[in-house]
Amino acid sequence: MDQPSATEPDPEAAGEGAGDGVIHTHALTKRYRGGQLAVDGLDLTVPAGSVFGFLGPNGSGKTTTIRMLMGLIEPTSGSARVLGHPMPRASRTVLPHVGALIEGPALYGFLSGRDNLIRYDAADPTADPRTRGTRVGAALDRVGLTAAAGKKAKAYSLGMKQRLGLAAALLQPRRLLVLDEPTNGLDPQGMREIRSLVRELASDGTTVFLSSHLLDEIEQVCTHAAVMAQGRLITQGSVSDLAGGARGRLVVRTPDTADAARVLKEQGVGDVVIDEDRVTSDPPEGEPAAINAALVTAGVRVRGFGVERASLEDAFVALTGEGFDVAG
Ligand SMILES: Nc1ncnc2c1ncn2[C@@H]1O[C@H](COP(=O)(O)OP(=O)(O)OP(=O)(O)O)[C@@H](O)[C@H]1O
Image (cartoon, rainbow, N blue to C red):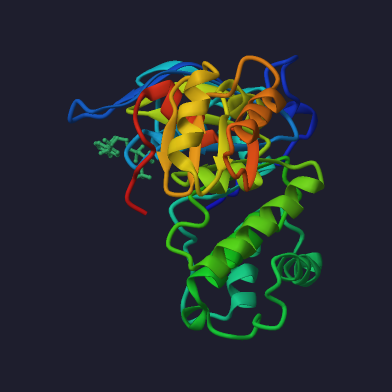
């Protein structure tokens, strides 16, 4: 949860360094006391205005990185800058501009949703008490909890609790939102709500940095992503570039799979695989229409033909040689 600072936020002092990105780390490393190397030489750049997905299986070092970025733990070596300032040194300058939701919101179950927010707002020395009611009302409205504002938080679903946590992070205007696994443990409906909320927040120009172990979640909401495995950065960039870096697959849907596979091989395309009523292969070097014509000429009943775009998952598999198969 956001840690209110004892100092006045100074928007001037929180300006990004030229070209540094909203978050920028250099060789950031964390070795825990027990000897576990949780984050290993991380160079990360989060562009302003992006919805940045920090993707990796459980245990790959995402939470440790976020805790270093938020100044909650010291790196063993390397450096991190957030909004142009070194962390954890500049925490008091930076954190008032950052809304954070880390490891689930800390809520009082016996208080209503609205009273929880009033408590958060009152704990922020920079928040004017005279405008508290307006701020809390606007935050509740933003996350769609106005109707449930009077209910005790313990009666909230997990998704509502996450939304209340987001509302707390949104009591003040923020330049950066940091969300650690915001959809973890939610049912599909709760996930959809949080995802659409994230998109909405980003459409105002707020940079959103969110961690997830779900590839399709990153593909659905993020403009940019970084992929972690075992504490190391595997790749980062725009989601379309990352997926585009992996080659798509030619997909032919047909009842005549054996004939189709033979024709594709004759046409010189590689990695031909029969998968139920589909035959897939590497994309052809030349014009796909020529392959289609060859299939039809050979009497193959073509029910579907096309080159499927590579997914982020294909990119991950291509980069690591491993499937992205983690327990939900
Ligand atoms: N306080 C700690 N002391 C020692 N080791 C730790 C500590 N916190 C995390 N680790 C270890 O560091 C590694 C990275 O953990 P981290 O929680 O950062 O990963 P993660 O990608 O966020 O995974 P998860 O989604 O499961 O939290 C793991 O091997 C974990 O066991």
